[in-house]
Length: 284
Image 1 (cartoon, rainbow, N blue to C red):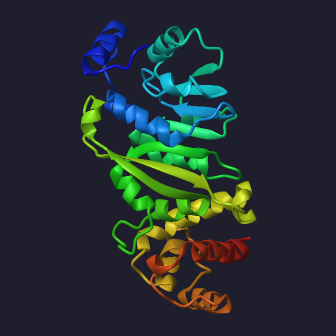
Image 2 (image 1 turned 60 degrees about the horizontal axis):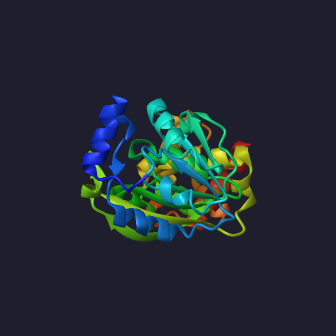
Image 3 (image 1 turned 90 degrees about the horizontal axis):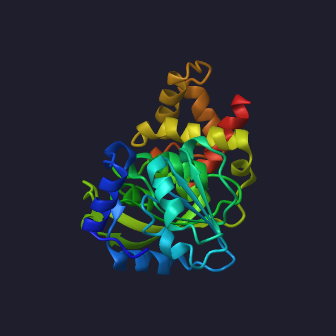
């Protein structure tokens, strides 16, 4: 299988009778130099078990499979699965899973190398990386999401993904990828990032129930990120009909746990986790 340009991709899609689905984020990498750069950043060894999400027509797969010990491809489009199965039939280190990545139990893996379908980036990040002992990730994602991942004092781009991802992973910005490197050309800019698991993950985030509460709690309070803690928490609990949390009670709880009543977005990553623990304990 040789690297495909735009014309090659169009021919294959026509042969498969498939039109790229925008709502599935089907944009195919057609720049062999970018493929080479992504593979170089991935540092794949013959000991790695790789998960590739949404491989499409296999632009990355072709290079991953040459070195990795095992490669799992999860592809929702059945025609692409048949195509990939045929193209890589000579390899015995590949397994193709024709399913929705968000609906399956993930196969065992220690590294993710993918052009993530941009329409479901958030749910994919949560499923793959927000857990005990997550894999390393080398993924291309929408630039605007990448900007929110990297911690900033600009509260306008500070969001729940800023907190949640950085609680589990250490993100490293690698390089920008021109939208012209894809067919069809997406309406978004793309950034390649590397995600490295944080050492000594807090036990609170390792357990299913407390981790679920953390993700729910952070998602719930972040719409009030520009308010002080008392007001942000009061508004959050009000939406949950937790009437027992008056502003006076919330302030007392914060003071008892050495939290000052500052703007929500000014907390650091550790403080968000400690804040979650405090109210998890009270609700329990």
